[in-house]
Image (cartoon, rainbow, N blue to C red; front, side):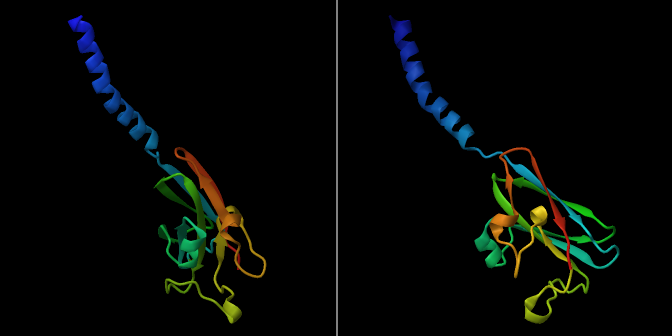
Length: 151
C-alpha cells in the first residue's frame, strides 16, 4: 500500500513538469532559411543591396528585418537569410551603381538603377504588393526564390 501511494504521488508531481516540457517543446519555433538568387546583375559595378521585410507595414516604414550589401562581382549572386521564424517574407533588391547607399530615382520616382523583388514579381504602375512577392518560410528547411533585376 505504501509503494502504491508513493507511485501516485510521484505521478501527480511529474504531470505538471512533463506537461510544461511538452508545451515548451511544442511552442518552440524552429528556424527556417530563405535563399535568394539575384540575377541580371551588372558585373563589377557597385554593390547589390537586398532587404528582407516581414510585412507590408515594415516595407512601407522602410524598416527591413535584415539586409545585405554584396559586391557585384558577377552576373548573379546568392544571399542567405538564416534563422527565420516561420512566416512570410519579401525581398527587395537594387544594384547601387553610384555607391551612395540609396536607390536612385528619376522622373516621377521611377527607379533609375536595376531593382527587383522576390519571386521576380513585377508591378504595373508601381511596385508589386507585398502579397505578390512574399515567400513562405517554414519552421524548418529552406525556401528559395529568385530576384531578377530590371531597369
